[in-house]
Length: 205
Image (tube, rainbow, N blue to C red; front, side):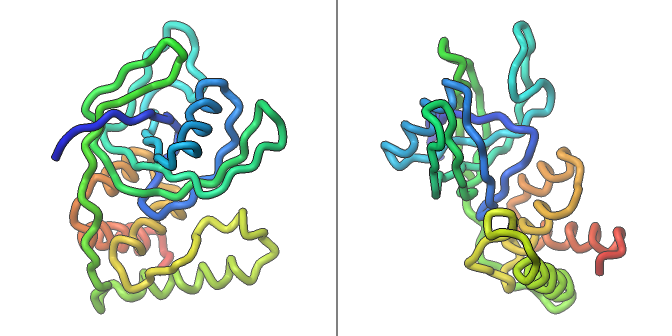
């Protein structure tokens, strides 16, 4: 698979495919990035910060995760010229091969896109993880939360291993390192099995 150049947005979070990530953009370098993404209908890469801060201090060298996820802007509101409120959806996973910082402060990486999860039906012994997720989503939908506050967005794919595993990875308070290990797995069935073990260990199943 060929590598390609991709603008990067380092965050203290892990974005999963089909995940929902609302963001408030105020730094000039990222305002320019998002406006360019909207103009060209292209994504940007979300990488997890392993060391350092989202707002970098002089002389601070960041460390990014080796696996990230493309983010597609699905909605944008500009309440002020210096503020963008955006909603993004997770796309393909990618491997981060190298990265550098441009003069304007924007991080740019050479990435290699990873294959999307093959659709894998949730087997019988993992059905409880899917059913529990369905119940949680129903509870959230019937709550007083606004649509923007509900972290799981349709279309729901409760019969698919990768989708169910990814949503639990977002909803559970897992360590960043654990989330990144699960994100990097190419086998969606194995990812859901590991998530199911975590749910059982936490008494959620």
